[in-house]
Image (cartoon, rainbow, N blue to C red):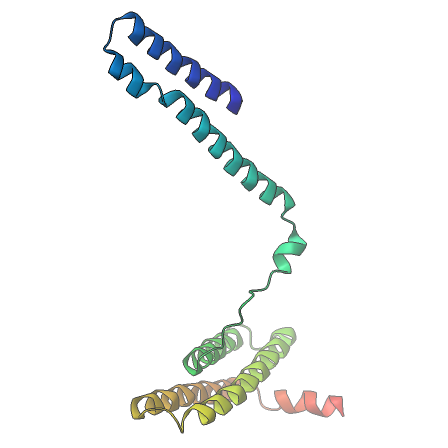
Length: 174
């Protein structure tokens, strides 16, 4: 279909050039317009190769390749990013607990999420302790504020969790 359209355009361009020659249009105008035909063919070939490349890439795409994709460069999270992540996840845990406080599965998932937040809090604390000695005054304040926000969010979430939820699983494992 694409070839048909390109062929029609090229034939129309050649017909217009021949018409200009027959109507006694000045030769320099015909010479200026003559490169239009090869340029059209070249542009059509470029467009076709790009379109085919996209089609081949889409054809090779599979769910395994999508799920297996990993970024090549692992960006190190800043303390502010880790703190923001902890605050967002703990807020989501509290919201989830308010919606269905009696759902056993939801309680287990919230406990797992809380443990992940605690692990991130340990990472945040280590990162802040590592960066604080060499940081300028304003940076130290922002680092401490990020840690404090995360601590407050974890504390509020811990209070929202049912009593004994985290201890019960620990005793089951022993």
